[in-house]
Image (cartoon, rainbow, N blue to C red; front, side):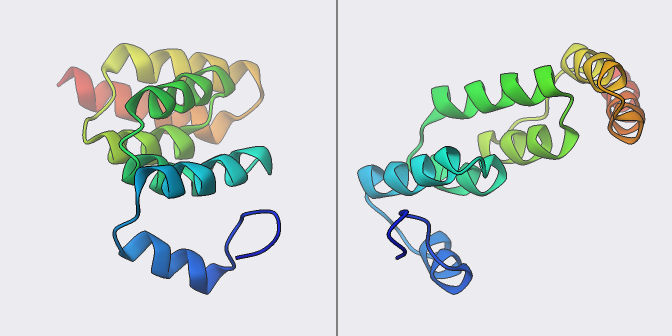
Length: 114
């Protein structure tokens, strides 16, 4: 693993595929988070069963209007966000000028309403 604690892509793939102790998974997740690579941290937070940390990422994704991150986190949590969550994300994405994310979040919100 690199000095930063972030594995190279091949190492990452192997680490994701095997069982890891929770403390090792958290250390890798923290290295990704410190580097601003939240999407890649999700898999290791899931391996560590760090539900509170995953929820913090989900909340941050909603605030930032980041559909991709919320989708990854919700997949790791094993549950679909509620319609209201998608609506809040859409509003925040629209305010941030992320119209494509806002449109996608609105579609998810309407699907959740059905």
